[in-house]
Amino acid sequence: MEKTISKPKKDPLIHIAKKDTITTGKLIGIKAIALLLAFIISSIILGISEGCDPFTFLISLINGSFGTSLSFWILLKDLAILLGLGLALLPAFKMKFWNVGADGQALIAALAAYTVLYFGHDSMGNFALVILSLLAAIVAGIVWAVIPAIFKAFWNTNETLFTLMMNYIAIQIVAIFINKYATGGSNTLPYISEGSLGMIYNYLTIVIIIALLTAAVSIYIKHTKHGFELSLVGDSFNTAKYAGINVKKVIIRTLILSGAICGLIGFILTNGLNHVVNTNTLGGKGFTAIIIVWLANFNPYFMILTSFMVVFLQRGSAELLMEIGVTNDSITSIITSIFIFFIIGCTFFSRYNLIFRRNEEGKIDNKFLAFCEKIAIPVSKFFTVIYVNVTNFFKKIINKISKKEKFEIIDLKKNKGESDTSSNSTEEKVLEVKETETDKAIDTKVNEESNNETLEQVETTNKEDE
Image (cartoon, rainbow, N blue to C red; front, side, top):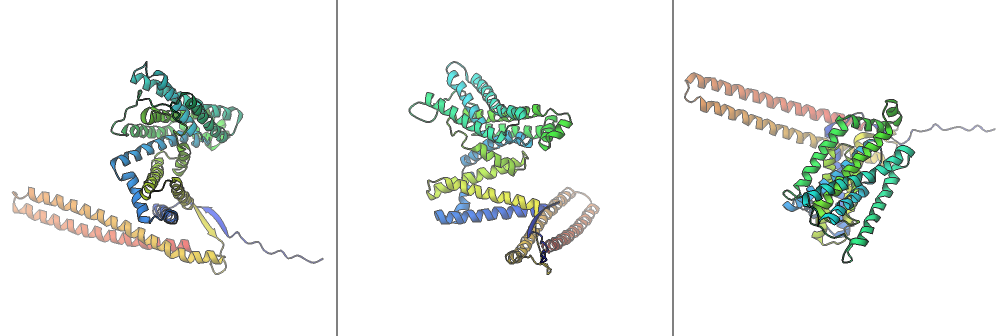
């Protein structure tokens, strides 16, 4: 019998380890690199497909949101609607109830609000129509959200599939109403001007409502007993039961809140913005809101930034299409998806380290990856030096501003002391000398600290690279 010699098993070439901490500078640097790479890739795609240069792309992104005052208000309006749908999903997601039915819940709420307008605009006043439409929208949104919650709580059904199917049911119900009540062969229910929510200075009303809603949801999740209970249920059903929490009650209660917020968004769309309803009233914003919540790491205030980023890209891409005369709007979705992909990737690299297997010489045990490492080390050092120099530059500016303020105070003291005796003037001169000496000391101290920080950060980068 021949003896088989077993070769020693090698460690995997790449394995992932979670980072303990990450500095703010590195986090900003990673996100900046991600956005830069996304912009470069989008520019290449636009250059190949549409013959568009990067400068036109950048200018269109800015003009689409900030070119005119109307563009800016449309940006705020779209941001508010997207953020509102994200806030509706947030409590359920914190509880790990994966509600993907925001589109259907808001659409059925918009239809309920429109139904009140359609049958009551001839017999009721504006105030009564607004109140009844709001109540109808909230009730409809709650019903559409609670049905999957009941099935999840009592029979442990899959909430993702259930809420997804409820979206299609809502669309078909709206289609039935359109077939019955739409006039002139249109795919939209008739426009009704009565029961208007009323807009203060363009879309300021909607912005104020969503701002208050953001603060309320944040307080509810972070500072109330109900928020603590839904977070505990999300961490572990068994732990929540052991702590004496009624899990079924928490699930249903949380989805009531989600449905009510979706109802509010449906009411805003019908009574505040559109005054009509069709099957594309939401336009897939409920699914985009899922990305908003995840990118913000379930933080309601960070959701403002992620909502702004998505709407900014959508508005800028639409402006670009108008500028270069392209009718196919799929490029808008492609550009937005590229940026979201890179931001998700940067989130991964900010939380985890990629550790490579190395040989006896300390090099990566792969020729291609070793070559990439040779390129990556000077690039990372370059960005580190840039970050340190930029922060030091702003520190010096702040220091100069503080010095100016001190000199202004001294000048005021001089002006006040012109009528005083000569002894007072000598005292002021002494004060000036002391101030200049302290300022010089501060400047030298800041320079020493900045140099130390540069050396420390370069050393840490070298250690990490090794």
